[in-house]
Length: 131
Image (cartoon, rainbow, N blue to C red; front, side):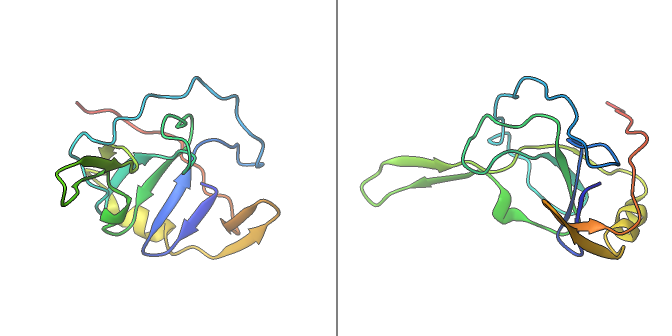
């Protein structure tokens, strides 16, 4: 985990515990309009904010309800439809949210190129798909 902001989110993937970039995979196609919301305990694809289909190896855990990160559909007064891309939720913590809260409370430091990084390394060793 290379970014932690208490009561907001923690970002993982993309880098080793020595802050070396892991080999990137092909970007995933954006699926943020899936109806899932960036609520506390959910896991979402991290991507470049300016490029909708840029998610690769990074993901984040929402430590609070962050609906402002959701995909938005809108209709103008003239009836024109538009959308604002968000960040695609693809999973949720179903057990052990207290562990995420503990990680969300660790002491952080700004390192070169890595703001709000845990002082002591926090490494995700396993994630299990249950459905």
